[in-house]
Length: 360
Image 1 (cartoon, one colour):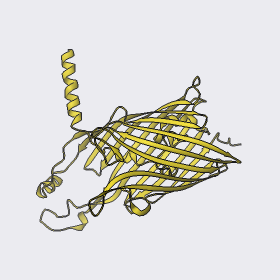
Image 2: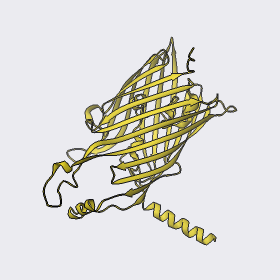
Image 3: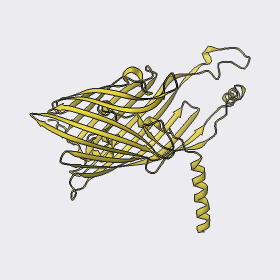
C-alpha cells in the first residue's frame, strides 16, 4: 500500500512540475490601493487597514476602526484593460479580524471573428460577436493578534480564482497565503508566503467544431485541458515610523519579493532565486494629509549599443482623510513610460467607521 501511495505521489509531482507557469495568476501581483502603489508596493510590513487582506493578511488585526470598506479602479494599456478592486473588513474582537476582497482584471468587448465567413464563403459582419477575457479572484481573510506577545500578529488568505476567455476557455483555482507582522517601538517587520500551498488552476476548453476548423486552417495549435501551477513566493518587508512632533510624521519602508521559479529580470537573480527590491516613503500630518513616493521595478535592459543599463519605476502619490472616516488616495505611476505596467492615474477610496448609527 505504501509503495502504491509513493508511486502516485511521484506521478503527481512529475505531472504538476510540467504544468508550472512562471507568470500564472500574475494579475494578483499588480497591487491594490493608491497608497500601496504610490509607495512601490512596500506594504508587507505597514499594511494595517482593509487592504492588508491583499498585502499581508496579518495586518488586518491592526485596523483602527471596526468596519472598513475600500474601492479602486485603474486602467492599463490606454484604457484597454480594466483593473478593479473592492474589499470589506471587520474586527471580530480586540484580537481578530476578517475580510472579503474581490479583484478583477479584464479586457472587454473583444471581437470574435471565427464565424465571420459563412458556410457559402461569404463575409458576413453580422456574424461578429464580442467576448471578454477576465481574471477574477475572491480572497477570504482572517487575522489574529497575540495577547501574550504584543505587536505580533498572523493571518491567512483563502483564494478562489476564476479565469475565463469568453465561452472558449475557463479555469478554476484555489490557493492559500500566510502572513506575519511584528511591531515594536516604531519598527515594523512583515513576511508573507504568497501561494504558500501553491495555487492550482484547472483549465477546460469548450471549442465548437467551427472554431476547431478555424484553428486547423490557420495552423494554430488546438488547446487541451490542463493544470496550471503557481509556485510559492516569499514577500519580506520592513519599516520605521518616525514622529517629528506637532502632528508631523513619516514612514520609511522597504520590500523584497523573492521568487523560486527560475531566473527573472530582477535586480538580484540566479537560476533558482530572484529578488526584487523596492522602497517607499510617506510624510503625513495628523492623519489628515500624506505625501508618498516609491522606487521599484528595477530591471536590466539592453541599450541601443547592446550594453545593459538599470532602469527603475518612480511612483508618486497623495492621500487625504476627511474626519478620520473617508480617505481618498491618488497615485501617479509609470513616469516616463519606463515600466511594463502601462498605467498612470489610480484613485482609491476607503471608508472606516466604528459603528453604524441606529435609526430612531
